[in-house]
Amino acid sequence: MPAAGGDGLEKLEDMIVRSAEASADHIRAAKAAIGTVIFGQDKVIEQALVTILSGGHALLLGVPGLAKTKLVETMGTVLGLDAKRIQFTPDLMPSDILGTEVLEESQSGKRSFRFLSGPVFAQLLMADEINRASPRTQSALLQAMQEQHVTVAGTRHDLPRPFHVLATQNPIEQEGTYPLPEAQLDRFLMEIDVDYPDRGAERKILFETTGAEETRAKAAMTAEELMAAQRLVRRLPVGESVVEAILALVRSARPGTEGGDAAKLISWGPSPRASQALMLAVRARALLDRRLAPSIDDVLDLAEPVLKHRMALTFTARAEGESIEAVIGRLKARIG
Image (cartoon, rainbow, N blue to C red; front, side, top):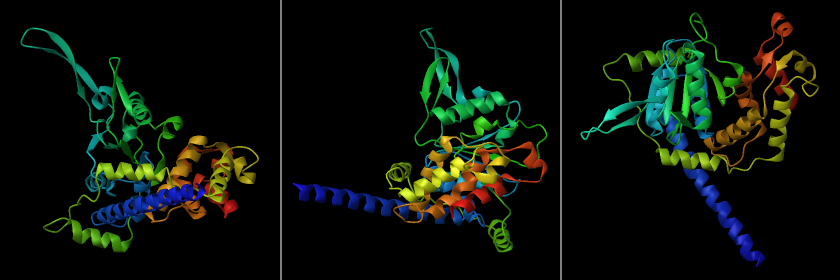
């Protein structure tokens, strides 16, 4: 009997390994397909894919013209997802996002309400310049992100599966904007910085995007394959040393004694939701790299995008020129 049990365990492990290899092949093909259209943003592409594999949402920060919108459109095509886009403006209402009920009259004269779904009913939603919308409209979207459904006129409407939001924010033009409250920023698994491309990448952009024909993205996955990969991410084993590194890092990013001198600079820090996000993200990154288990290096590499929007510095620390990125760097140095 023990031998049979051992054989069953080996078959299960073998099945997980084969599933992981197949999913990793699909994901790497998707990453390569995105890279044929988006140049010089390899780190951004990786972090966006890690976010989606983890089942989460991402906030993309960058100045205009860095292909944030194009990245989301390309990801929708490559991952086989129904993608939609909302341009946020101050006059945008919650019903413009969620949908509304309209009164209809049949030929027999009977009147009834019919729900017209809004653009939030997509598998991949781009929320462009989310900080331009009013707090009420922001809250409507963020609630949908958290609960995976919307309620209109007392009736619940489930969102499609998978459902991911990639929101963009312009960090330099703040006039006429409504910054996202810290509690709502926590809904985003990662905050991804989109920086300027290097000289070589920008040179490639010039030739590839100003010619007679522009490269178009091609599908590399289906929505079903993506959801299978997301389920697999949650099954990947995580070593005790990696779990301890996650706990040590997140707990040290809060005010208190665990962060040492760096903790004195922190006004408030990440909740256990950050630990959950980091746990999923390191698994997803391991799968993206065709590894069956995450490492401490994954924790260190993903710490900043997972933590920086979930913590704030004290007034004194800001006055002395400290930054959240520098504080996270010190906390990472304590781990390895």
